[in-house]
Image 1 (cartoon, rainbow, N blue to C red):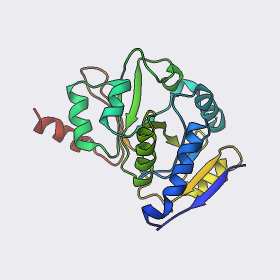
Image 2: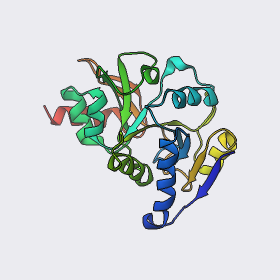
Image 3: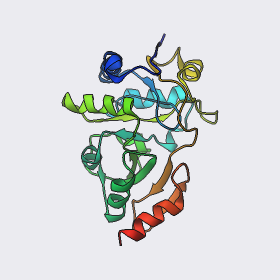
Length: 221
């Protein structure tokens, strides 16, 4: 049975304990539910193959679709992915934020290939949500990889959760720890672009528009 913690409108110093508990859960190979500035997510350690397989299973998600990662900063991202010039421009412009980049995996890699369905790419972003960033910061400070799996909190094909109560309706019996910080700021998914080759590909348009991305690339030429 999972554990639901509500801390909407509380100050960061008042919830540090609960964020440290989340980190402990991650390091113990457990799965947590958490807020982002788009929809709620579930995740855990991307280094743990059992966690990866469990997330696919409880979401009823096709393993061929892969899972995305949330990382603390560009330094952590650069440990597992290759950044070309375009990717660096976009990361510097939009991270932390609502942009997911699909990049070439570095080889060898600490992240099991099952995360990205044995493809040569990996998807990641630096989130702007203060709670998730603090969790990633604590992981990094403890000497661990500052990244977690970040996939939407829903069964595959169902609407994503927009608050902790909705996460609990989906997963209270199947995940270990849920953090409820109130309603999502935005119900839009992140924008996703593939920077793994010379030609940029837009895979999904969310809060950040195609025009905003094209402007950044044009202004930095």
